[in-house]
View 1 (cartoon, rainbow, N blue to C red):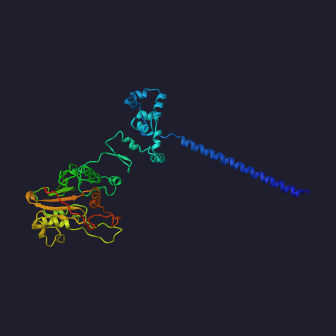
View 2: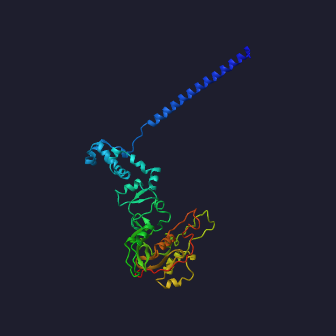
Length: 412
């Protein structure tokens, strides 16, 4: 069937429109391709921009010439022989080589470090081949200790008399790592961590008659707080195979010519023996998990007040003093005990040189290591606005526990 002229004209216009559409699409695609190429070139240019090298990769000409490692025979070898020697080294040895020698780092670069980063390190740990770069550095610093929690090298743990708690202590060792409520001043302090207890149990005697002192826990320092001088003497020994930490708190007037020491001078410090016994008058902190506020126990305040003569008890709240403290006044060696932890203490008053109060506390850590870990959690103070009942352990929240009795050193 022959087409009419009108049909032929319509088909021609349709073909023209289709060709125009194809041309416009081709033009659009070519323009977008050129734009993407331009953007890609810009990205390539951006990526090609050289970054500044880290400081450990940059060396001045003076440092290069003065480097004593350049005189080693290894670096005097031809580069081909040097590379063949390096190819025989395992990855950790090559990484150690570049970490401890700048000349080797300049020649080899940091390619060996990639095996100790991210997924490559985790993959290597599954097969026991790769570890951490910090562990490799420990080979050259053998006196340091590697901490897997914070991925760094720590200096050796100091003795309690020299150790000071920092903001990283609990982050590194855990929330129950340290007893931090004893004084820590620039002139001296005492900070006990769980690792000290572990170290002491390594030398636990077999016989129950052995009572040799443990020099690890020795400490003696004095500092001035307000109008009083505070002295803390610490020692430890094995008593009936129990680890007993003895702390002697001595408080006296800084200037004995002013006036005699009174009970209010001690109770207003505040003064603390353990996590649950303190003379603080601060209100209980607000806790979002507990509506009921519990005031501080007055046991320590009562024990200190009853050790003073009646004429020196002025300034102490009557509610903090027992109505019948005769039993505590008659016996000078009366021993008090905390209901929530393994702590005993005795209070003695001496009238010489303006008066001095001596509070001797004994903290027991048990005979076995698992028992020491349990007693340790009772002695660590924990208080905070978000802690629940199971986590709190302070003078504002403590529970009565059934704890075994222990003997105290006889020479104190």
